[in-house]
Amino acid sequence: MEDAVGASSPFVVLLGILTLPWIWSFPTALMTAELSAAMPEDGGYVIWVEKAFGRFWGFQEGWLSWLCSFADNALYPVMFVDYLVYLRGDVSPLERWTIGAGVISAMTWMNIRGIRLVGLTSIIFTLLVLAPFAVLVVLGAPQVQPSVWLNRAGAIDWAVLLSVLLWNTSGWDNAGCCAGEVKNPQRTYSRAMVAAVLLVTLSYLLPVAVGIGVDSNWSSWKEGYFPIVASRIGGTWLGTWLTVAGLISAAAMLSALLCTSARVPYAMAERGMLPQRLAALHPRYATPWISIIVNSAGLAVLIPFSFQDLIEIDMFLYAAALVLEFGALIWLRVKKPEMPRPYRVPYGLTGAIAISFPPVVLCLASIALSSDATRYVSLGGIAAGLVVYWWKCRLSAARERSPAATV
Image 1 (cartoon, rainbow, N blue to C red):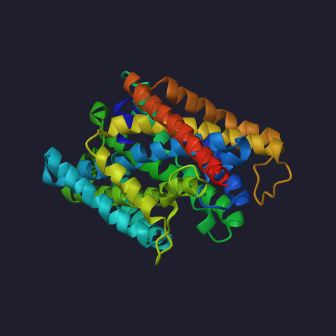
Image 2 (image 1 turned 135 degrees about the horizontal axis):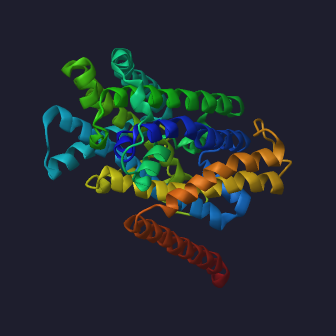
């Protein structure tokens, strides 16, 4: 969240944190709960969009999400190094890449070992990460000047602000990628989604509110700034503790998102949309190990990029994919009303349209506000997807004609 503070003002950031759960997080979480419970298969949104709109759009959804996962997951090795700089000072580009690649390798090994290990370590990591923030809130609350929360001074960089806020409160649909490996998904998803949205909102709101209430140098807030705020509130020991928590957080998020994102090429390969090797399962752990390794290799290439560059590309591609997902939610209500839905968004088709409208508007705004460089890179990736789809169709058609010609 630090970059959001640096791109705007205390009032705007706090208003965004309080508003987005209702118009962004909850709608996406409820959409995920309905579609995951109705179609509990690995692959999540690829399957939802394919069943709603057909194979072409299912491929585009998978391709967009796969490209997005590279930019998104690469943020975490970058964050890891940014927090490490607080402890040991600046590092050379080669050291930066080596450290980031080491983190990726460790999380890759953990993911190949299985989803149960990823889930267990995620719970442990969460407790370790939240502990210093809880101390920061308790020690910092008496030092806060509440009047600064209403401060609106300073120019607003809307592209950075919106990208960072939406990114920090996005990703709920990723949980659907593992639906085939979740016990009792019909009951689990709706409960988990609602609880997670509330906990995530509080975990952002309280530290940010206390931090900007104590440290008024808001224009200097950027990725890795929270340890400086912690040092001012509780001393060097708290800054160091929070830095270690930042390192753990970056590694934990990489592990969790590598787990979900690797299921996307796996699901696409199973449906013949990508090379079949990507659907191979590990002989011992039954995980899509080749997809996991391919994803990890792509992340290593992106380590030299900056946090802000990656996050803008991430949100452009994610926004485009999320529009398709909400479209699938609505169209499946029309196309397949008889589909069993153990959990469904309330108030029928009207309710599905109502919860879809605010996130879709925010997605379009995020795309419209993106920089030229972000648009060129993202549209280039989308164009590459069209070429890959055409190539796979040609290849499939050739294979279908081959036996006939032989006969």
